[in-house]
Amino acid sequence: MNIGIVGISGYGGAELLRLCGAHPSFRVTYTSGESTVGQPLRERFPALAGTPLGDLVIQPFDPEKLAGVDVLFASLPTGKSREPLAKVDPRIRIVDVGGDHRFVDGWVYGLTELPGQREKIRGCTRLANPGCYPAASVLALAPLAKAGLIEMDGIVIDAKSGITGTGRGGSSDFGYAETNEDMFAYGLEKHPHVPEMQLALAQVAGRKASVAFTPQVVPMSRGILSVCYARPRGSVTTAQLVDAANAIYAAEPFIKVFASTNGRSAHTHWTTGTNLAFLSYAVNRETGLVIAIGAIDNLGKGAAAQAIQNANLMTGQAETAGLGGLPVWP
Image 1: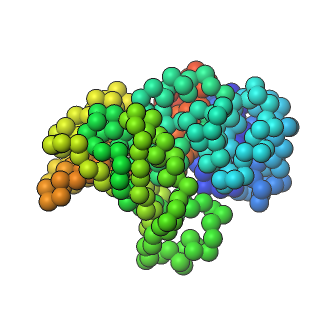
Image 2: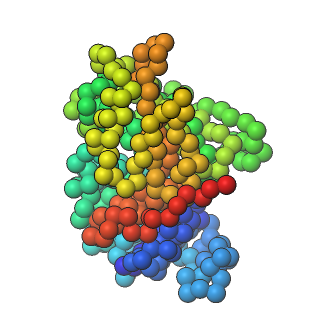
């Protein structure tokens, strides 16, 4: 299959290129990047020197000139993809990694492991990839919502992301000098991921959900740790939480339910470079609050690897194709 990647200059686009380059059925034939137009890929990615892919020249994005492309990955900042993607030939399958088409009519929401979602993704032509924070948070909370173990109002999500989660085009607040040996919260009063999380959780639970979300940037390159707090519905044990997660994720190739022992929970580094999500659960003995934890790679399950998983389903391939690599360990 011929693959196009829009936004090759960004972190998400570069990760898509890396994963597609090792995919058994995907061949990248078109790339676009606003700040790198005219460059052969070998200049942007020197490891591609001496390969056919390295000779591919980065093009300006013209949505009406994509002849020969079977699947288009669009990794553009939120607000930049809705207008141009509307002009793409309807026969070309699109995976929008940005935020413009989540829960928009005509587009399928692409968090594959949510109950019933895989069937909607399979064979669709317009797919909206989930946001990175929602991928970690919703995967952790969904089993509890489906089993009716938690109240759906007043959920608190405290999530921390590596610097690549802000995008290469982020403001100077997210540069090395500003983030090294530092940590800060942002989006305190409003964040665009909140409606997405509320809608996804409400869909699973069958009733309205309300979420208080505080994202934070930590000085690491990639990874998200989302710690979610919810009030239990009646008396709930940690074992019940784990059982609920295993009930819907037991056969999922990319979800690992890590039973907490001695207070230990999932680590972001366990997911680096992969499409894996590690989930942990507990009940706080002092407050009785339920704790659900999701750890992912924000460029993996939170972006590019999830997009590949969705494209595999959309094109009738094995869901795990091109995604079998182990994490990058120290």
